[in-house]
Length: 101
Image (cartoon, rainbow, N blue to C red; front, top):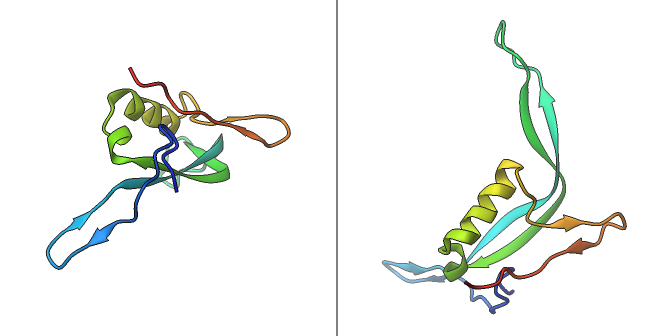
């Protein structure tokens, strides 16, 4: 397993009797599309959400996850402002590390 952003090899979580050490986060992302479902409350409009259509799991090391520009990219992906992955017509994903500043 390696970090999606910097390419560093990530290690498994180490569990000890009174502590643990995390080296990465697994991110559940992928191709999405906006969808709606009906709100059961009276006089309420439909609820809009991002439907995950092609799920992909990515790994982010703790160092990259702590970087503000990476967190912004992840937030943008989660909120539907800008996808983390670019999906091409053939279904091939164009990915690449984010340059360090």
